Image (cartoon, rainbow, N blue to C red):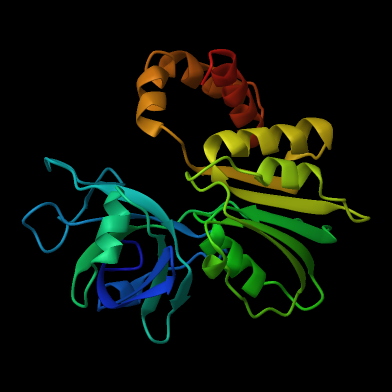
Length: 296
């Protein structure tokens, strides 16, 4: 596909167990060689998987500039994932999948073999460190670990960062090559849908270095909300100094069912904030506050 394409087919070249709970899948093929990376550590694509009985997902088409499965039913299952690495010279793209029971993407990754094909969308990003930042606090559970690892690897020489990561077992700890000055705090055996997370407490107990900082967090949605509230309300960081993203949610189906009753009201709050001139981050804060008031 061309550079302006809204999606790319990607063929499995290799799949390997990276750690006890992480599978690394390398993709290639003529189509993915044309992929256009945004270069961000948290470069996110939606991965669409083949439907039952098919060896690849259907192709997207563009209508009025919108790339989607127009006129296709059922739509294939899709999940958001970080591009762990892309090498335009070799046309190889790497995605790390958390291996857990019951997930569509996890089940696919655990059985992935060479030649299987998936579909990727255009990438999005959130990580955006101000030039004036003197240090970074990078926090994630295992779903955010691929983006965090890439962030560490892309640190320029002399950049300071402290990393807090929650993994299921000691074998899930990873090492990264970096030119930055990085300290690590690995929390083993908590969070990740297995038990209560300790990331909120770890962030609150982090002693802030001198100078302007930047906080990036990726993990479970309710924990991300608590961390965002602490960073914004207690530390008083302006929105340009943090990016805190909920990558997944505990009991997501039950949450979604309840959310449907408040969706219209919540979206009205978000869109109203944008119309009033607030930033996307500020609008998201108001959206979150409204959901919290109704127990979501």
